[in-house]
Amino acid sequence: MTEKRIFADLISELRVKRGASKVNLSEGICSNVMYQYYEDGICYPPLLIRKRLLDRFGASKDNRIVLVNFEDLGK
Image (cartoon, rainbow, N blue to C red; front, side):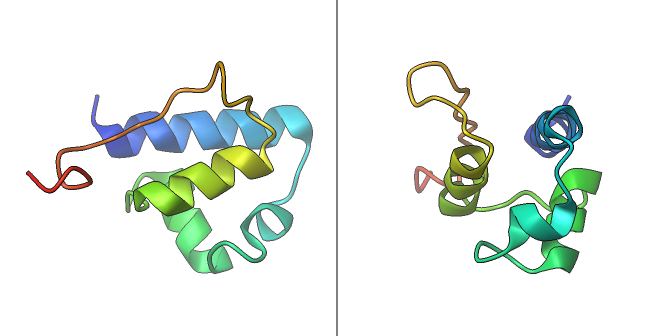
């Protein structure tokens, strides 16, 4: 499974569990269209966007999964 798909499944599951709308989650972080692309696994957001989305979901810094790919590390 690719990073895009793992992240897409994660944010979709978190959003559904919280009963939140895509519009509310993306507000101030990314466009509604980009959020939809992230949740559909079409695009993989940059690290800063992933962090902000996970913060918006209330994921604890101690127990959340940080998804990093080699592009983020400059490799």
